[in-house]
Image 1 (cartoon, rainbow, N blue to C red):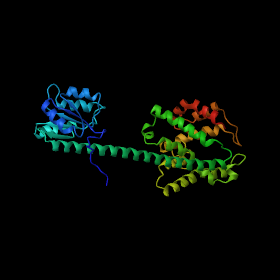
Image 2: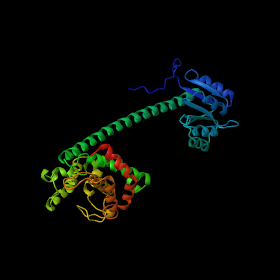
Image 3: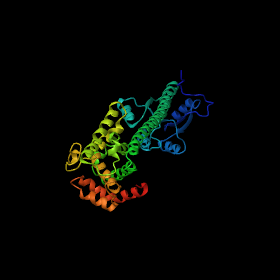
Image 4: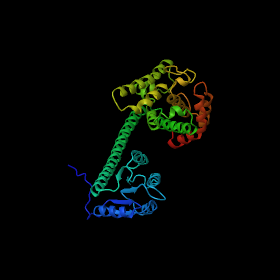
Length: 369
């Protein structure tokens, strides 16, 4: 069994330090003689002297008389608790008062115990030992809690890294099949980072953004086209414009992607990181005026995640080469997107897009096409 007693061996150089404050020299002398065999004792005849000692010594406990001239015990403990350096030091009041109101006032100010004067040696030692034991256990609990918190943080980091690896792997598989969109996933993630960063700075849709885990949101963006994994190569990599029939099949990648993500969520308990993914995958082809797919949602009925991805996705498609079109310049792509404000895109987000257009261009230069 663990030994929880306080070490009072006078030969121990690591004995606890106690400051005893009392304006009565007889009490100081008696108290010091009782405590000296077990503790390092620093007698202080006044509260002013207490604070002088505190500049040189950090005690484990303060024994504080209440009735003193100039600064009494109540004033002294207020000053102690107001100073971050001393506020955690436990204080036991020494008092000749025995009324309940005086004791309650002391406890309200932060005292941990009372010892009545004149005090008996055994009782004084026992009260001090009990309080030091409590402090010792508090420190152990604090260390335990800090270690536990670090373990939780490490475990959380492991889970997030695993989730990120899974998302990246699935996204890579989709992009590997779609030979026409190399680098699309990486670029759109960075576009979204630029957009959300500007929204946070400008406090746009702040009530929504504050509920997001931005890291999960950006990771989830990798799955916006996950449903393309179910589209045949003949359509996905067709060297030409899709027929109306083929385009209808291509559009199913949205519902297939949503179902795939939902299936993962149904079979796992740790799926908070997919909350954004299902909204991004399901809504990034919806349009502000209701002309999009698959649900024909309008305006703010479209999840904010989808409205953001719509801008990032179309910008990247416009600047990319396709078998049925040439690539547009950055300026041309921006002009096309801005012309869709209020029809295809959320006009509030288009204003955000205008602020970060240079960042979009930088992303394209650095990652390449």
